[in-house]
Amino acid sequence: MIRTAVIIALIVVGCFFLTVGTVGLLRLPNVYNRMHATSKPTTLGTAAIFLAGFVYFGPGNEGLTSLIGIVFLFLTVPTGAHMIARSAERIGVPFLGSVTWPDASVLANDQRDRDERRSADDGDE
Image 1 (cartoon, rainbow, N blue to C red):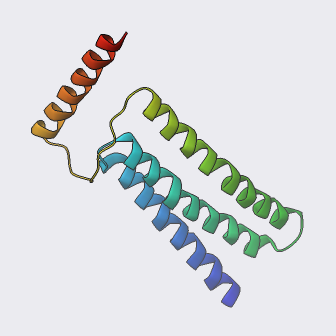
Image 2: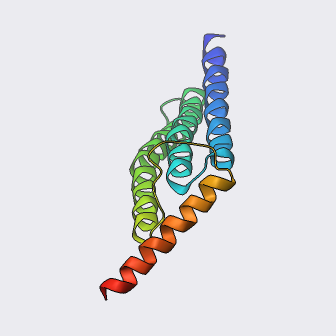
């Protein structure tokens, strides 16, 4: 009975964090915020579901597979998020100092800033 309640609680927590990550991916304004939304909560959500699998299957081969999945997740997700952020920075995606929902003026200002940076870079060469 307690084991079943723990499994259900872990799955509910996992689904909640996965949903939060999905909403963040759809709603946040730029690549840096979206990357954060897809790496942090989805890691916790997936780890919770892996833990539910470990509790269900026990410490045998199937349970060990769940623990290996958690280790793999914690090694690969931060690395992938770092590479996405680094690539976005290298191609010139601007970083917003504060999180604001984009409207026409914010998008126009971002485009103007990118154009100014390009013209300044062209003048340096």
